[in-house]
Image (tube, rainbow, N blue to C red; front, side, top):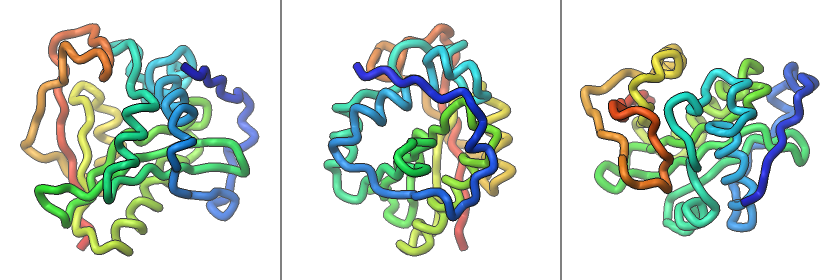
Length: 193
């Protein structure tokens, strides 16, 4: 697996939105994107950011094969936020089959050393533009329910908590190795109308 080393300087902390590109990932990006996600969520560098999962999950968050399968599915996209050739963040989105008016959002990932620079907010803003341009009525996502500060972050951006819950996929190491037995997903939704 490719290893990612995040830059530790803060030289990109004052980027203007116009300095950034938000583009579709392609299949040849998958190994790099998987390494980026795994390092940002569960690697040693993840502990530099506030969205780490390392204290309650270990192992991988995703792999190149999963991302390639995702990209090979119609109406599934992975968008990269970059400054020049430097990957700063990414997100995957797809049109729900059950309700095609909903854009499902997942794996929002930002370089842990730059998580307080507004890059997550920038990614969400651009996803919302994409959703509106493509006639989606809502954006839906899930968050591990013990991640209260992350849930509050999304609530400040207009997401509302739904009653829907789903148990973490225990016994499936491709999603990670839980360190506790009470993990579940909480769902949030943002109406675009």
